[in-house]
Image (tube, rainbow, N blue to C red):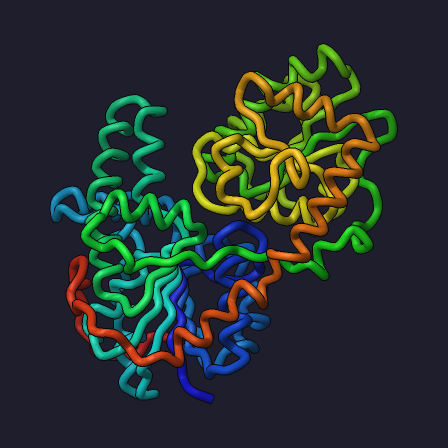
Length: 420
């Protein structure tokens, strides 16, 4: 099979959080037709036992373990160079040497890059035909963070938004094809970088409809007598922290005033201290990491996604819909879903969120929404359908493009440093 370089900022296995779900399915699809040479970072020690499973899908797997806290400190050197902190965070001399050696040794001419910050490793290789999956407009995320934080973080986030947008624009200019998760994200990027209009297109997320099937829901984890409302995700991710805390503090008291049996379950790895504190309310349970999220979603009265600061299609929403559970999403996310609000899911703002959840305590109404949701997922959100375009793009002739973007990592290609 044709060799292909696949670069991802985070180990794409196990697929247990948003970006890893998308990157894993990209990799799984590409492995059917290509001999994959995968370079990636490991930022969670819990992922290390899974390396053999991922390695079995690749010809070569090169991993580098990083410590997020120390990396954040080291990335501050970007303040002196004018770069985005995110770019410096994922810069590694060892990874650059491995990329250089792999491209030369295996005569690689094509690459798929997951996350814009990994595109820096191809700066030295303009001859490599590349598809870059930005997923979301990350620079816009930092713009949204800024007004929700005090100085100096507000200043730092605004700076990151500006410098990362410059880098993203350079990545798109240098790529043969660039991807974002929804048409809305494409429109946002084009509004921020109008000179690159037409250079980015949407590749939607999918969902594993066989795995996330109500028939595979497993045993009910909830005690009898409670009406469980569930929120899932990585609970050290700031938009998820904000969502969980806002819902517990602002919405749950209004729900419980009408239905005292309502209980909020926050299900996901690495809960931040602010999330753990929610258990003191007496009506919130924080599970931490679970072996299987499906029972927690499938047996809930409803799922919620009150993500006031988030971009693109949320995997947690698609998974709940696939499990035939009604889900209430923050109103600004509804435009990212190829589904009908009021039929396949419910949308809510701050004023209406409690009302929407209370309506789903009616089992017949919840079942109707859930069944419609499952049908919509089966129709439009299968991974195979979503990723079919990748094959045609990789087979297409490379269009004329720029060969410069961002900044070149200050590394020298001397020896190969790889494991896996």
